[in-house]
Amino acid sequence: MTPIDVHLTPDYAGRALREDVRAGLTADPKWLPPKWFYDARGSDLFEQITRLPEYYPTRAEREILQARAGEVAAITKAHTLVELGSGSSEKTRLLLDGLRDRGTLTTFVPLDVSESALRDAADAINVDYPALEVHGVVGDFTAHLDKLPGDPPRMVAFLGGTIGNLLPSERATFYTSIREVLEPGEWLLLGTDLVKDPATLVAAYDDSAGVTAEFNRNVLRVINRQLGADFDVEAFSHVAIWDAENEWIEMRLRADRAMRVLIPEVHLELDFAEGEVLHTEISAKFHRPGVEAELDTAGFGSAAWWTDSEARFALSLWQA
Ligand code: AVJ
Image 1 (spheres, protein in one colour):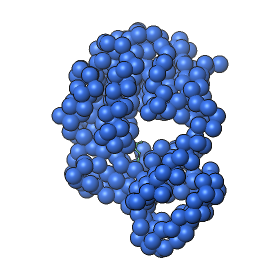
Image 2 (spheres, rainbow, N blue to C red; image 1 turned 45 degrees about the vertical axis):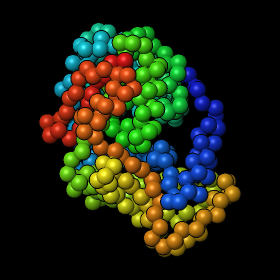
Image 3 (cartoon, rainbow, N blue to C red; image 1 turned 90 degrees about the vertical axis):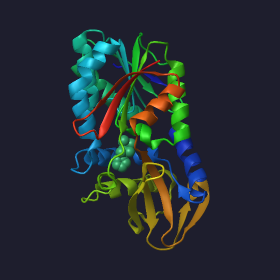
Image 4 (tube, protein in one colour; image 1 turned 135 degrees about the vertical axis):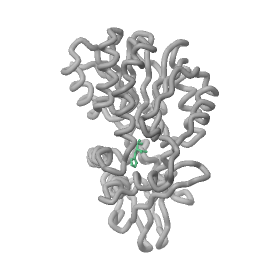
């Protein structure tokens, strides 16, 4: 049985969703945070996105990990790998293999908001890495980074480019709180998508098969189910634009007609004008100097910067 620490109350997700819906859908423009895409269906849609021809980040990051996991292990000699977010992916295994082969790794700590996702991930890793101590933590990585278990030196991995979902001010807070939970000499391994031509970026978030559109609309399905809302999901169109000034992709849902939406569980009655947009995600893209400046401000030293063969994505290593 894999030990799992639960740092969230059973209704944490429900409360957080209610608060986000109340705050975001009464704002102008309306917005929702991207974390609510990921119910079982949303997670499955995201898995499908990672296999789309247009969605290069997953393949690019995998290429880097395949080439560099050994170097990560050699530099860090990490005893504990803490992974923020999904803990069962093929990319996690590349990292675990690299660290195991180097002989330093004793403990794997996957941290996720979803207890069921975490249990599945932790159990699967337990089976395939019998010598590894797996210690799951149920928590929100923007709020529960305190008391990370595992014996030092630890390495916190935040992969996939998910850092890009945070606004610049949220990133600063996030980096600082990671820096604060680490002891000097411990590590952060970070995956960041890089700025490139807008056509490539937009295609990655507006695929021809329409999977990203379904993923985007899924947040409305989550609110319908969790909060009893009556969004006509099909009446919203997927929009993905490149914001050149902020250097982020922005996903929105546009109301195809005027409509009223009831969300009984938060006592909201909302009006959408025809063409009104709801902001659902930013996915920021980076340049090396910008990443270095932000990590430096948080008190990290630079240890390595690797990109894939087409310089689309970067994996970087930082020391607290
Ligand atoms: C999982 C957050 C890295 O921002 O690229 C994929 C999510 N959104 N397609 C990203 C996503 C639209 C993805 N991350």
